[in-house]
Image (cartoon, rainbow, N blue to C red):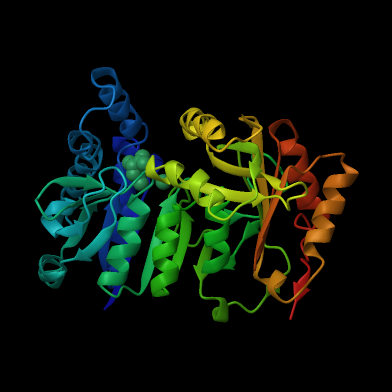
Length: 414
Ligand code: ASP
Ligand code: MG
């Protein structure tokens, strides 16, 4: 018997009607002779509502108690879906993260999974039950409830699929897969039937919101294919995107997609002495404040001093700005500054590995549109640029067209 893990996101379980539709779908898959584990998100809007309540009662209260509150959304859904399944004559059993024993570290609100106890789940599967697991949550060594970060139900699903050696991990959402870019920005963005886990990893870290980054990291690490599907498709044969190992993809395209992110902000400390240890002195207080840094650029020095620029999440901008301005004095830097109104645009594709000239085409395309590039960073299969936020849409549209992503026949590489 095949084992399938299915995850349903917030909109897919957003009402009693939607939950009934999920129950019908689960039963269809079960009747085809599969064992099914379902992972559920909180009903749409619920996690935000809980976070809002927390914010009304506490400025920076205990992270432990916040996780106790935000984790409840998923518990409601898992119970409701189990009830819906039972009402339709399908035996089901629900589990919180603690009941499964999804053991995590104690980094509340962004905990990492350490291990999963599969024994209880196996016993219930053997009795023919559908298992419904609350996504997004786990338990630490001391028995405290933890949560896995926004969008963390994706990670729960992938982790369960890996732990139980599932045949497939299906992520049901409100779109029928991954597109060449966000269709809300580029109307003729194209559906991607199959892409490499590594490409998805870059797309997710560069701003594509379809799958949570950590989930893709997990899937990539353990070679677990993910299928993204829409729970709003009537039947079970609608479009989907398979995110799988690079070896399993016949068509290698030069550029798979254009991702973007408006959530970043740029900080610059200029005229710092060009001496060993300076980068460390600038970045370590930022890291100590638990602020994640994305891009880092340091200029070649001309007069014994250099400029240092990096980007952080926009929510961390004020704090990071405070830190570097304080440093500027100590380091005898010329000045510190920054910009909140930036955006990052990236092109991603495994084809870039073997083909030069992609960056040139990107810069040429942006230049023709008169879009100034503020920062550039590259990896083997990605080129990212930071630009003024007001040009974001124009940049995404022109790159999408410039790389032929709107065409049926894409540029293939061998
Ligand atoms: N409910 C959580 C969130 O909204 C986790 C999830 O849906 O994956 O982020
Ligand atoms: Mg989600």
